[in-house]
Picture 1 (cartoon, rainbow, N blue to C red):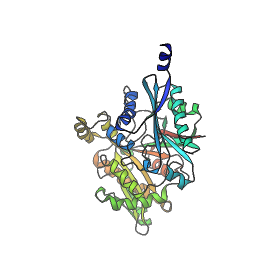
Picture 2 (picture 1 turned 120 degrees about the horizontal axis):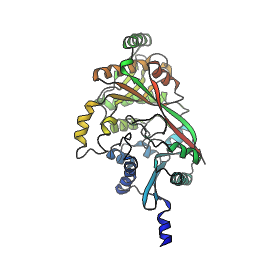
Picture 3 (picture 1 turned 90 degrees about the horizontal axis):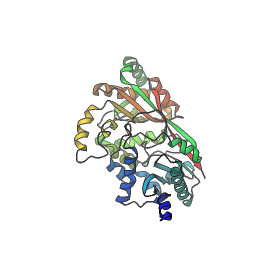
Picture 4 (picture 1 turned 60 degrees about the vertical axis):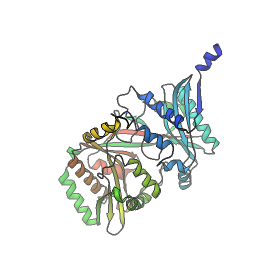
Length: 382
């Protein structure tokens, strides 16, 4: 009897299968873990399940992955997903894995056992380091532990427990990159000044800004890829430009939130597509009311609260190097500001911007953006 009692109090790790029941348990831990946290925003369970089952998720096509759950006795205590992006490794000359969706109770031993399990699996696959937390779909959602800032996150941004960075440091992880979030208040923009400067830049450098047409995504994706292929920095060891199908899949995964506004492509008369900005209404304000479910009442809440959203989230801003410092980013942001004014939006949140991405940071700071939150990714070498 004593041995059985001791066994129940032992932390143990289980590699889970990828059937619907196991994935449901993997997802449910997050809901149990944050249920009393007023700032947490639950993502749609159906979307998370689809991601973990590989639907509209090109990252899982790029290499193997595994999921582990931690138990303290018979009680679920944590989870982690690890994997290998073989496409990124080949393009960047790396031999690394990634971890994602890390969550655990406030017990370092649980975190250690989860990290140990993930590292052991990655070693078996032949890699020599791990980076994370990254998104399970190579996006921004769940990327980084929050190391500065508080309050509810905006759409597709991470929200993590304050003790996670301490656990990572204690295990031996080192900082890899910080990713900044900026907040811009629409009411503080000097619209007439920005419009004057934008018009001068457009005339001088021969470009214009078009709204992305979601009804012609196949053709728009070709131009989007041209921008991304030349604007993703080589030194970023967590990201490569997506494939054409990956771009289409990403837009399809976000179509619930895309209302044909706030997303633009800049095109040069001489050079074709030269800039991209993707911005979405902050549907976290809606998701917070839905409890992760569309049915039976989630749809009604979605339709009601979506008309009460007060801000937008800038997901990506890219300008090809030849058009840096030529007003392209400012011109795209000005179009976003115009949409925000028409729609009664109060703020624009721009994230997650790599700390090394000086052109993007300078542009956002130049139009009044305030750095208000930081997400950190970590690296551990074996």
